[in-house]
Image (cartoon, rainbow, N blue to C red; front, side, top):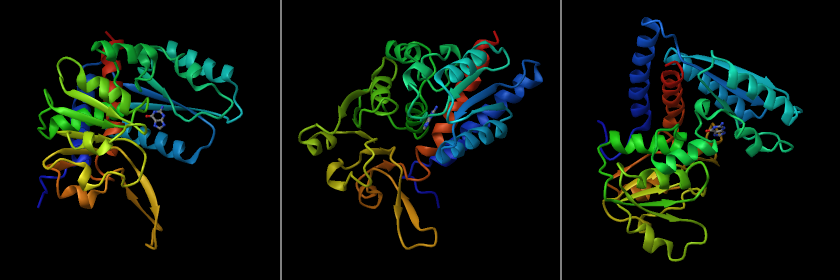
Length: 292
Ligand code: GUN
């Protein structure tokens, strides 16, 4: 039987994928054509290869086109900038990403900021960050978008509620705080971080607690108000004696916190499956915007 307490990210992601697939099919049927996402992958980092391959598979599963531009780990900034310039100007490509991390000799900021903001489906360019802050239409970064969708689609009331965000990273904590406090979403947001004093007193005030601190099972039951909604962004491999040799945990001690929360995301199967869906959503949006 379905457990109403658990926010099933896998199921919600599948539902959104079906919605996107229907829109893509309509674009193909009406002669607009399928949205096309490209990825620039520099070097052979194992995790990056896996991520890019998952993104390609996800594109194909909803009928989108995908291309990968692979560059050697020894590429210069100039080589990467040339590929970006090519994709910025290729009318066949609706949106693209530069998979991070980049090799140490490359200035990541310089590379990301070279992406045309109209094709920046990761939402990483200064222009998209600024538009989000202004509450204007933009490409939202994947994890904040995914968290908002999980809350909306689980009928969690957000307007007027106190959201406490643990973590202030550039790709999760900071943007999700800005996004959820904008007009129209209307949460009251507090950000906690490694220097926050009496953190438990603050997290216990949260109606919705979003945890993105990168510490395995850091959040215990006594840090959470009875009935709070808990969103766990963390993902950690913990070595064990099982056949696989490891198991996955989040930033939240799920077993303990499950008892006090009214709703909670599992790890795996919570926020994770939503991030690639966000990229598909942004690619669809880019195709609609750029083919007008
Ligand atoms: N590396 C890990 N996550 C991401 C992401 O969301 N986008 C890009 N471009 N690289 C990443």
